[in-house]
Image (cartoon, rainbow, N blue to C red; front, side, top):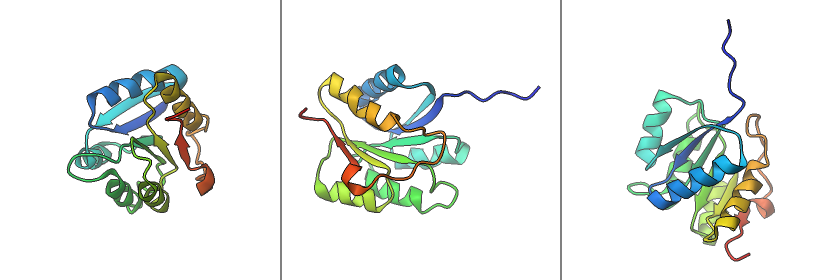
Length: 152
C-alpha cells in the first residue's frame, strides 16, 4: 500500500522570540491546513534542519535573529541549489525600506511586518496563506511584496 501524503503544509519557522512562536502557531493553524510547523531559533539551526529534511513547503523567517541576521540567512538559503526554490516569507517587526529592498532582492516571496493587534496578525497571515504553497508560486511584483497591517 502506498502512503497518502497529507494535504496540509509543512512550515519551517525561523524565530527566536517565545511570544512570537506562540502567536504564530496559534494563528497559522487557525487559518490554514497545516501538517507540521517545525521551529528553529537561528540560521545555524535552519541549515541543520535542512540537512535532516527539505520537505518544507514554506519558510517563515524573522530578520532579527541571534548570531546571523535573517536577511543574510535568506541570501545563503537562496544560494544553495537544492534549497533555492523553497518559498521564504520574511516575517518581521521591521518595516525599514533597506530590509524590504534586501529581502526582495535576495529572493523572499513576501515581507510581512508583524502587527501588534491579534486580528491584524491573523489577517496578515491570511494574505500570505491565500496562495497554494503546495505548487510553485511566482514572487509578487515589488508593489505587492510588503504586507503591513500594523496600523490598520
